[in-house]
Length: 219
Image (cartoon, rainbow, N blue to C red; front, side):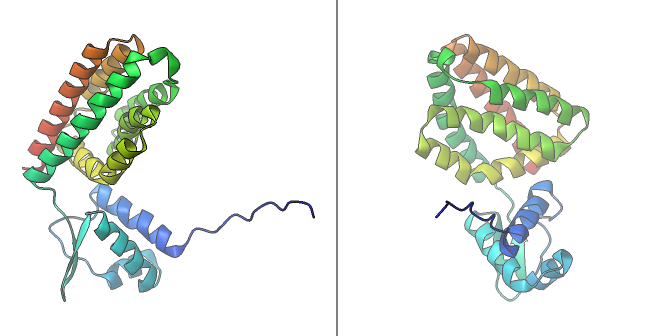
């Protein structure tokens, strides 16, 4: 029997609900100082409560929302401690990543990182904060992916949405898109030319500025 082509699986309603609610949270459309309920969200999305509940449980497991007994749910506000811990983890992983890649830069394909920077310039020109953060994270995640270290990448993926939420809030209040692009261009240039120590120093400075911006936005 001739091998059949697998059918494309339709996207489930719970996945669609998850993507939509996650986007509402990351974009700031859902506020941390408001209380929401399943029924209201389901009505807004035009679907039943069951897929919404499944989506919310997943978002809760990722630390983005908290259920309030007999009230509903709220979007979590990241605290100063959260910010400290997130950037401590980022430094440990991302400095190690740029160091490893810069030592053998000629063996890595840096085109994805270069493309992210090009698209970031367009997003900055359009003042599209959400799109900019998508691309900013692609830039940072690409270094981790290139290392081939699955655990390093898994940790970064685990805090991905928290980084995104912080970044979007920061950009809306402290527009440093152009500055961030210049910093990242310098990081990539150092990595490309095998300047390991310079790449580490530049990445650390970039993360410190991002942290300061996040603290300012959430303070």
